[in-house]
Amino acid sequence: MGLSTNCWKYLVLTFNVLFAMSAVVLFGVSGFLIYRLFVYRHFIGVNAEYPAILLLMMAIITCSIAWIGWRTAKSMHQIHVIITGILIILVVVIEFSCFVWAMVVWDNVEIDIKSTIMHYFEHALQNTDSSSVDTIRWDRLQVKFECCGVSGPSDYTSKGQVPFSCCGQGPLDAVHKPYASDCSMLYQRGCGKPLYDYARQQLLLVAMTALAASILQSTGIFCTFFLAQAIKEKRRASIRNSTSIREAAFANPDDSLLASPTAPAPTLPKY
Image (cartoon, rainbow, N blue to C red; front, side, top):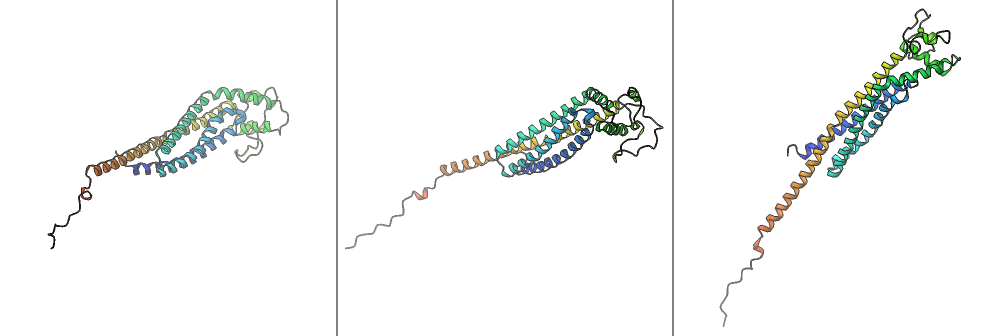
């Protein structure tokens, strides 16, 4: 039968520990990637965050399934082990779907960014308040990526002046590098291309994380169903052993109890 039932049991228990650890890592990585995309959601669009959000939800569900798998492996109930295996299959399928979804968004993110960033730029350009939220977001974006406008400084022609963030000056933010003291160097590239590269990089990380998680966690499917098969074989062997013992008992009955007791030797009557 290959490995014994106890061997498969301890393999499944070990897998569930690793399963839970992978869920913790997945939770941390997906949460970090959500943050990286969330920071620039006004320019990238919300659709780019959805694969990472789904991956975060799967990390939470994976922790629950790991706990269920641990309990079922210790109880050695075949039907419960099979249900756990089915749950692991669902997790792996959803994570692989998350990989496909992230790759689809990765392929189409350029179109989404072009429409979103242009709409936001036109809205911010019409705002004359330099301390408004939209203006500050644009300043931070231009300082972070060292860019100016969507396609270049010429986007500010209608306004008549270029903001200081196009040369590294803007609202103080500890995340950004120190700002220049003057505006002697004007950024010539637009923010559309660097933001597009940034979004594609984050989405690629989301896709690779989902793919790696689905491949690594799929090993538990085989271990779980092999354990269920081992439990089934052990039960069959136990039934066969009990049946053979009963058949042996009926085939060789103890006739000693059926024999009549030894009669006393006949004695002559006394006269």
